[in-house]
Image (cartoon, rainbow, N blue to C red):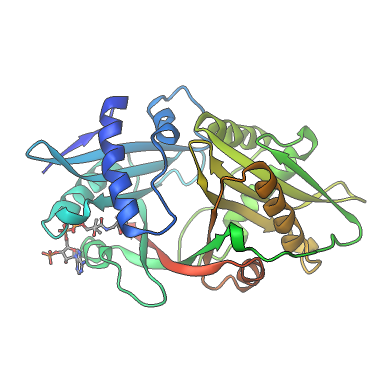
Length: 326
Ligand SMILES: CC(C)(COP(=O)(O)OP(=O)(O)OC[C@H]1O[C@@H](n2cnc3c(N)ncnc32)[C@H](O)[C@@H]1OP(=O)(O)O)[C@@H](O)C(=O)NCCC(=O)NCCS
């Protein structure tokens, strides 16, 4: 197999065709990100929100049979990378996955990164991921077990959740009000330390208002709409909680829960459920084409999962983070 780095939109189209077949075969209500979402990653001048992506195509006899992507954090976790390898369903078990993985590891090493993460899906509640033997063979180990949950937005329960006294909810699309940006950046940093990580060695992320704005700009450049809600503590003006959902304007049928976090000193007031129900209402009103909402949580994150179960989410797959240190 020849592994070629994707440098231009024409090659990315070939890459996209393989990725789309893999995602459609392997998952329900979880299509590949669209070409429009990926094209901006080829242009280093566009905002990347703190992560640069490279794409690789595995070619055999001029046929594209597999793909890999490698993500390089650019602000923190500078010794780490994350990757995904996919082989066309009819082309599996012929050594192509191993060849793509070897190319990824070479690239990661050349970039001076000594740690790589892989997100590996498998059946729920039981099932051995196809990638497990492959990843074990290069020395990787599972470090964090997550569950993907899915909500059919046409069947979500109607919930009437009051907002706790002393807080108000603010909502927006794409760009947050200026007065919230520093608080939102702080909550992004807390996402990287407060969400359970089990044995996954992910360093605390470094966020400020400018990076938060760049994250918004990176999403917009990729045609992703952000529906967001925050709870503000009225007495202090502090952003106590936030949640956001992403939708591609090129494939709005499937939506993605991005971050949700409540500051520790503001937990226990039902703010998580209160902001999430309002954000679901905003999504329903603004994006009626959206049918499915995906979310991922650490299996041990009982509080977040309880909220998601109340909202009607049901588990559909395991997603396990694997870590390789070299
Ligand atoms: C994981 C994946 C990339 C492997 O691709 P592949 O081309 O089939 O991999 P290889 O042929 O190089 O297999 C390498 C080894 O992995 C193991 N393996 C791969 N698929 C397996 C399966 N379904 N069951 C058991 N072992 C398997 C075997 O040890 C295999 O060696 P062998 O065929 O000599 O026994 C492919 O199954 C895939 O695209 N899965 C969906 C996406 C995914 O889960 N990616 C991993 C995220 S990083």
